[in-house]
Image (cartoon, rainbow, N blue to C red; front, side):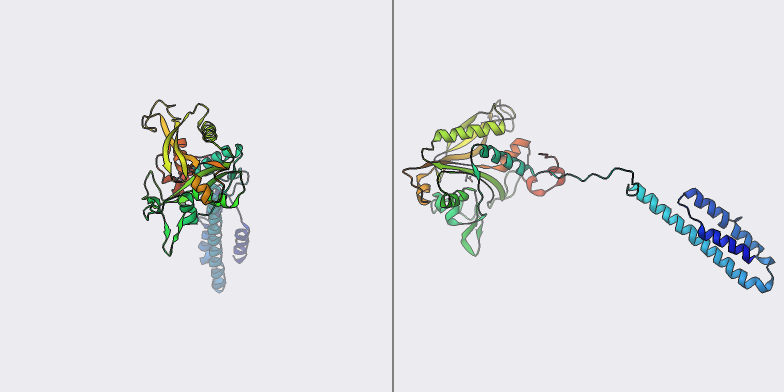
Amino acid sequence: MLENIQTILSEIETFNSDKAEKIEEFRIKHLSKKGSIASLFENFRNVPVEQKKAVGQALNELKTVALAKINELKEKLTDTENASENGAIDLTLPGVPLKLGSRHPLSLVRNEILGIFERLGFTISEGPEIEDDWHNFSALNFPEEHPARDMQDTFFLSKNPDIVLHTHTSSVQVRDMETQKLPIRLVTPGRVFRNEAISARAHCIFHQIEALYIDKDVSFADLKQTLTYFAKEFFGSETKIRLRPSFFPFTEPSAEMDVTCSLCKGEGCNVCKGTGWLEILGCGMVHPNVLELNGIDKTMNTGFALGMGIERITMLKYGIKDLRLFFENDIRFLEQFIA
Ligand code: DAH
């Protein structure tokens, strides 16, 4: 009897399989009602009394080992099943591709606009987001009492109201005029801040691009030609522009530029509110006071400047209706923009 037990024990100990049917066969062979272990237990009553203790112990041990073996093999089996369901174990499967990121739509449009100006010979310049009153307002010919200096529009540093978060990229013009030699031909992207309530059409943070060209004999015709080139490059060669008189403290004369609506080709639709025109940017000839305030000889030099909001142009280009989407970083929104 003990010998029998020993043989079955070593059979059980050496058994191994990763096939569910084989494991089940093994279970039936040894652990079912008519299995080897059950029949050994049945024969137990024929064991001579003096051997009962040893044989009983050996039998119980055999049963424990067999049960442990079955459990171990079944556990391994479910692990492998799970793993292959997740695709982690089948080494012949192709790898899971890494998800490619995409550029933020504001970056795409900013880069496209910068590229157009670079092709015209403009160089990119950048300036600080935290500015003093001089660079953001005074050196740009803003009068003391101008409403843009008001608490409603500008974020001031509470400890020092002379320091602001720059409200437009025009402040970088001032830094450029201070540091660069003429001729100046720069394009300036930047993030700007205004104390506005956040809505589908306005945000307290947005992005602008500014261009500045100062040299001898820069004329309004140069400005108009630059604008026409930009509009056709960005919105398509059919695009026409129109200039409406406007006011900015730092330019004289000042204008706002509209382009023919790229959606309805000027026919009138709900994006252009039936006018056929879309307002794109502000521009003008650099005010002689600004040249003077920044140490540039206003009798020898002239210049033009222009500034545009990147959010607005991006919304028009992609038909985006809510400005807040740009700041929410929702992957479902962002992954739609492939460069
Ligand atoms: N700084 C103006 C704004 O934030 C935009 C602007 C208008 C910039 C006319 C210019 C310009 O350079 O000439 O609304």
